[in-house]
Amino acid sequence: MANGGSLPGSGNTCIDIHLYTMAETIAIEIRDGDDVYRFAAPRSWNDMSRKQLFGWCGVLDGFLDRDDALNTAVLMFYNMPDDLFARLPEPMLYHLRETLSYLEEVNLTKNVIGTLWILGRRYYGPGNRLANISIAEYRRTEIYYQLYQKTKRREFLLLLAATLYRPRGGKDPDDPRRGIDERSIQRRADFFRWAMHRNTLRSILLFYEGCRQEIIRKHPKVYPKMSIDVDNGPFAKRENKEIIDMEDHILAFAGGKLGNYAETAKCNVYLFLKNMEHRIEEVEALKLKSK
Image (cartoon, rainbow, N blue to C red; front, side):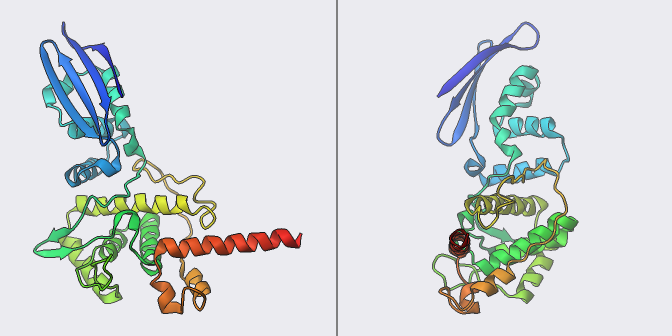
């Protein structure tokens, strides 16, 4: 699909722009007099490269307002020369900002961060959509995430990163990461405190937020209130809410078809939440019959 238009540039020149939407990119062609420039930007969060994600996190750390941040994103993602960008008229800039408006809501569910090398140490992250983490790991990351949102204390964000990114050592063929234990998470968080770049840490937060949003939306019966309006964009203002701990839910399912407590805690997060939804539906059906 292609669309384009002609907008006046500065001075006596006329700058034309044409947009082409492709599978993974948004391509633009800019004609400036006799010169023709072609650029491309990612079409969505999941089409970003690792470098682009880290760069966007650097923009967010600059505390820019929406338009300034998206203008910087246009310059960075389209990899446009500064002098050409400076001559683009505001109506054209508005149109280009809109092509990247998806940045206003975090929908990153693909682990574009990949494996992290930090001072010679290698750390493996979770799969796309957090598809290979257990309910016990999700319970822990949710506590750290909620505490970070409530207090804005960096230590909780470091603990979140230290839980998700671990050295190799696991026995699960779908998850190479070493198992979780309290002491190693704390040691790793202490190491990340001074060794991990802030853009990397922010990228892990955005990846987790995108996956978390996906989990909430896929399980509306488990998260009825949260799934109605999930606003996790970088410019969103959040209220300090009560911390939700899933420990009681794990205990409630222990001893059933998911096994004892240890076996239930190791259950895949999506499988566990699907069982929760089935249990809720059964209870709802019994309530209807009793009326």
